[in-house]
Image (cartoon, rainbow, N blue to C red; front, side):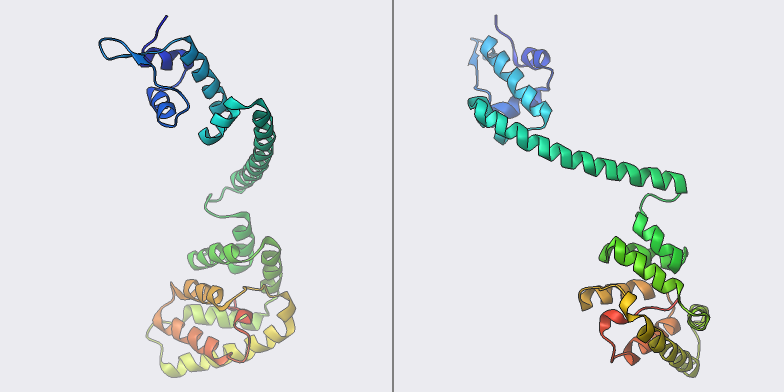
Length: 247
């Protein structure tokens, strides 16, 4: 008995595209053609196509399938490798499922990682703080995020008040007001950093610090940005990765 390409695909339970792909990859030999030019597949093609389909459904890439069809020993080795890969994927799916469950429970947007949510507890939930939390927690580890939250939650009222003053500063603020505010921020910030240096996360290099700076000031007006630039420039004696933005 002979079957057409469509009939073979239906018998195996795959698409015509799969059959053609198996031909192109050399897994399934091309059959003879009838006098009308149509392919005719025999029982051997059906059995081979079923074996290929079985291995593909298990998740083996086609480049492995050819060797597995030729060698039972190679098939066993591939099974052990596939099992290890599946264990890794299952563990990752469990992790993702746990994150999804937590996000559903909290009723928050799925674009926020658990680490970003932790950071927002200290940074705030306004758009600027949200953006900073997303980028910051991409750059540092979960443990460092926890340490940063502890650090920020210990910010004294003086620094918190200065931060509010910066965020309330109008775009048309005079240079004298900007400089005076920056002076207050530098004095308070240096002392706080000296007392809490060990709890600050390591951002690895200056590039990461520059990324955070860019995100932190993105939604600020020109006067607010001017204050922050003065603060960063004035703390030039501190290692770049020790400069933190007050909240």
